[in-house]
Amino acid sequence: MPDITTPTEQFFICDLCGKRKPTTQWAGRCVVCQQNVCSLCARLEHEKLYCERHVPTIQIPEEPKRRCFIATAAYGTPMAEEIDTLRNFRDQKLQETTIGQKLVTTYYTISPPIANIIDRNEALRKTTRACIDPLVHMLKKRGY
Image 1 (cartoon, rainbow, N blue to C red):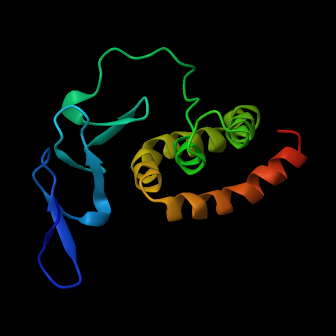
Image 2 (cartoon, rainbow, N blue to C red):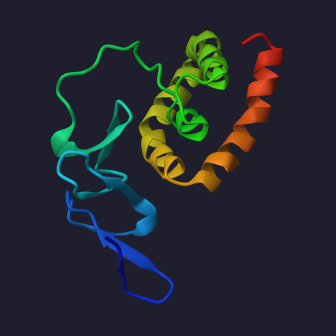
């Protein structure tokens, strides 16, 4: 996958866009074609990574924008109680304001590749949980 060009920096070529990128922008391999995909060309659908060419055209019905990519990666399941608290806050507070809606839209744009990185590294999962837990605790106290 990555080729080492200098002793301190690693790069890879995205098989989809053909650009040379640092390994920090590697999202993973497409589950269909196994090509290396950068974070810009990757699409996360139903907990699986696809390249732009192979995103499933048949969508599994689910409530719109109910996914919490980063928290799901951190807790290992979309069914974690903490994720319900975050969803409640999103739906009851953030979605009620224009700024909140823009924050949610931005989150859905940038979070899938971040979640892919977190999901593959137990230390990052643990660190992310440690960051999310105080927020979840505060939101629970406030009734979310």
